[in-house]
Length: 233
Image (cartoon, rainbow, N blue to C red; front, side, top):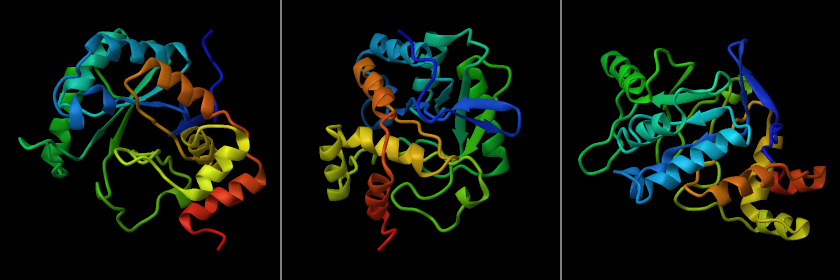
C-alpha cells in the first residue's frame, strides 16, 4: 500500500509550493561515480515509479548527473509528470572528461544549465532550481538554515563514505534499528527546514529509507545524536 503521509511531513517553498520533506535523490541512478548509464536502466525506472507511488513529491536531480543520464531516465519513467510531483534540479557545476565536478556559475553557464535541464526532463518550466554551493569535499563558510530557508544536504547519509559514529550506533542499537534509518529520522527532527533526498538504485532500499525516517526519537536520543557534531559538549 502506498504511503501517502511521509515522515517529516511537508515544507512550503516560496509561499505556494509544497513538497514532501522526505524526497528522493536521483544521483545514484547514473553509472559508477555518477558517470555514464546505469547497469540496469529498467531498475532505475522502477525506483522512480516506486518513489511516486510511496507519496514522494520531491525528486532531486541535476543535468550533470551522468551527465544527462538521470534526467533522461526521469523523463522515461514519469513523463507526463503528476500535477503534485516537483522535479527539483540544481545548477552550478559541470562534469569534465575525467568525471570531475568543476564549478559553472557564470550567468551564461547558469542560463544554459536551466535550458539543458528543461530539454532533458521534457518540461516547459522548472518549479525549483537549486544553486549548488559549497565545496564537494568539505563545507564552505556561511549559514542559510538560521533564516528558515530550505536546506537540502546532498549527502544526508555520508554519500560515498557512509556516516559512522559511536553515538549513532549506540542509539540505533537501543532502538533496534539500522544506523542509517536513525540518521534520517534524526535529521528530519533536527530542524523543520531540512529536506532530505537520500538516493538509492534499489526499490527495497527506497522502502527501507521511507520506513526508517519515521522512527520516533526521544529527547535523550536527539541530545546524544547532536553530540556527533560537537553540540552539547
